[in-house]
Image (cartoon, rainbow, N blue to C red; front, top):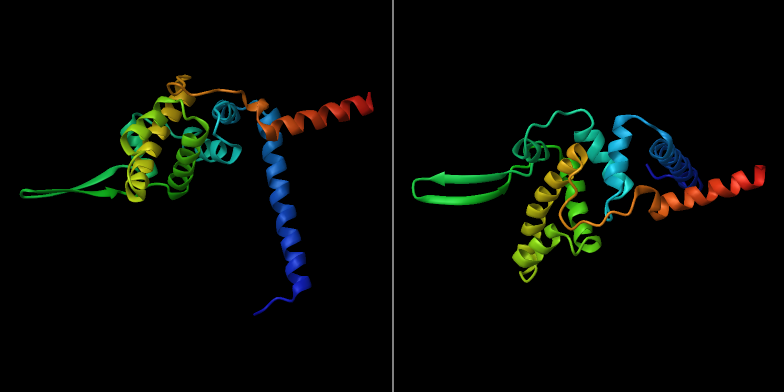
Length: 194
């Protein structure tokens, strides 16, 4: 069934209005809410290269309600554990298990690419560049999954224990462009009403 152009425009407008509403609600929670879950989101947002979508997803899918005992359990929950094949004298690595949460696996992979761009001086980025930076496209893709696993573990340690990833730059969640715009709008509203 083909929608008429004016129907598509109205449908798109309704969808965008709903998305903007949900995003505004989430931004208000991040800005004003005092619950422990939102505090964890803010802690992740303190790191350069971690945005509100990534922080929100990681916290609400893993860090807010799961009691994670160790890094192996965490990597397994995300489906980032290696799957070795061993039969007789043959030993091969078959990639990652992909048995965990695919949304988190996708997001942490995207965050790993962003980490390389926005945190080039961090120890994790330096490790990736030494190990995979000079390789071909396939090798870099394999390396980004390894970096994603290491980054997920480092972010878990940061959220739970306050131990920032080595060499990572922190700038404060309220200094990010999205939140600065909200702060300046609120200042204008206060000045206009006052």
